[in-house]
Length: 538
Image (cartoon, rainbow, N blue to C red; front, side, top):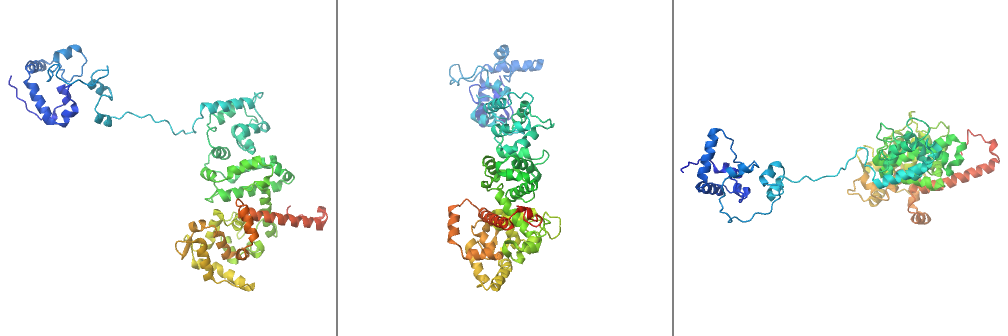
């Protein structure tokens, strides 16, 4: 049979050749092989009648079956293209599954019988477990069952639910929260203000609401914050502090003086935001809450009967010192102090220039609504910064004061501006003055800046002596104390390295204030003759 063949071999589909013994990939990658195979196929004796039959069928409109896509045995036997390899001469194929031809499997979906290169193009889908849960990760079954069992124990015999006073064990034992969170948690569950919390309502909030799997910081944040906000405000802390004042044995004596209960709660809140709210915007975020030590202090306050041993935030002695120092300066007792009041702080320790910078509200905007007056909250920030210059909030506070042009670095001229008043005061007190050039060399040695011409906030935070740098510039009493350091005090600091400068100051001042009050009591003889409007409030 003479047949003319024309066309591009590169356009041949190897699958149409139905060469089961030859890999389609090998044919596609070697076009000349396809051409040779096609020529050999045309020379086979069986090819001529098959091609004639296919042509006749095509003319008659009979559907052709040359793609091998049908599974009909009749079509397969009648129209099968003959193999180029004689019977028994082809190499054995690898075992195949009973699902049939790999070509059929290819059209149905990915096949494991394809070549390695085809596996790369059609990778098997990897099942990735869910890692994001909008309302938190559901609790594991074991943890969930344990919580449900404990809930059944505490709610046993209270089918109608637990009242507020009965709910505290649930807060402490099941939720593992400080007991003074009981009221806040109770009201968060009792949204309809029915006065009771049923087991079903508790389980729905704590277990089904996925509170069970959250860390304690997130639990506390969720309980305290307002539902429509993503941060905590001063008001959010007041409910738990009211319960702390009402239930803590170390604060029982304040129950007869509710006005000082309120002042104590305010002071605790101000201290919390001073150390925790590093943005200084009055909005405590979850990130800030997790980074701080407030949660540990809350748990400590819940377990410790002596509130004064809880040095972070909750110590009553610390509140006493802050409030009394403010009361001493506020001579007219209008709960506001001005420049002349503040200049008397610490026995006139501060310079006029630094007090002017404080009242210019550069380090912090005053919350007082009266022009030129500092309120109690502003004073709390000031005294914490003044008495513990080792803390980061304090370093940031005083850095802003010294940075006159606000360019983020302290230059020689800026430091000299503040030190000039210190130098003048030393001369007036007949003390040997120390020239600024010597002071600057000392400061460079203390901080170790990269450039001796200026100091950055990061460099000051990296030095343990940065607090003394600020004392040199504007606090004469502490400057003199640093120059003549008492070995006894140095040894005390080494014996108690966990105590901060604020802890040591508050302890000393509390002893002094309490001794003065005892002496006052002895001189007056009876408290009945006191003029309470003129005396300190303790």
